[in-house]
Figure (tube, rainbow, N blue to C red):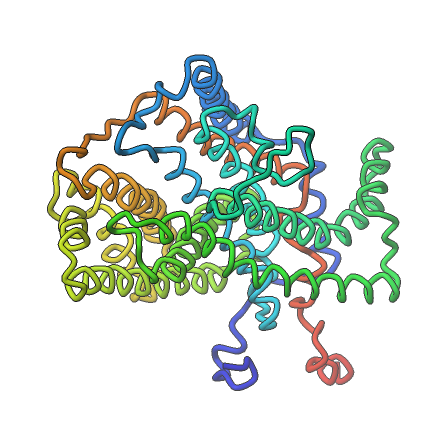
Length: 462
């Protein structure tokens, strides 16, 4: 529905709290990277860095000892590496959706949260890129996945979904990085003018690419930003659809379904918004930005989580209906195994965390309660990881022939690399919050009182 047709109470929900001016906005956001971090920040980054180093240590041990240190076996040849890859690619979807799609629809409530969401996309894709290299067993040959002329006359197999992933994820990362960096340029130029440090001024001068804020600068900026937003909008739908083809093009029972592309896209947006809520809740409190990231923003994101939860519930029902209606013995057994098999707990954790618990957000008071939204978002993050576990492990360990059935038991190296990826993600988030503005001031200034054309009469009357 166009914003102009919305009810008055919805159209004029406060996007800021308290008296905010253009000058106070710059002082609050742009001065933060130059302040000395508090003790809490040092404690947090020490913990996340240690977890990250533990994960890299596990990767080093894996490379030295071989792929046998993981729980992967026959028939579960796809274990934690692919589970984690699909999970982290999904986490990166909400950032582009908030920045690109909501920008295309001119939703102003995205302005205060778009910068942090875009950064999360970059960091999540950095985490995701580690796992395909681990999965192939010999990461030093990872360059074989890229098409390039070589003296050995070797060429990649374009029919392999793994190659499709390389093209899709690398394109998504490149466009998301350009989109994020382009939005940073006006703020980097403002920080260049504010700082008194010669070193910082030189760094900001290089990074801002000569931005002076002229009408010509803004004209090119708006055109480029709109173009990248259009490209990113298509990628939001295509990237996780391509990732779903890793499963859908196979003949494995439980994977060979046409519902997988929209199912994976909805799940990616679902998991991404939950992570955005977790990160912004911490940023809002620790950086004292309650007046800029208001309860209106949190309420909107919780509504998106609730909407995606309902779509996920519908997808699960359709998966069960397909298994029943197909009259295929193998597909029926696979779905039965999800719910009542020897690892039934994984299936029920998925259903509980992704469908049942988010229904709390129907209550408006819960959508604006930090304990509740943190609880729901944490449950969704856990549930979406277990959904990937259910799809991959439970489909493979009970395949066509009972003689080839096996048991998947993850190892400490599996868990170490998983925790290390979370350490890497939150370490990057903490570093980003310290060295760059977490809010796009150039966009939030449009929400400052009397900044919009409809307020011109009020300013003239005053």
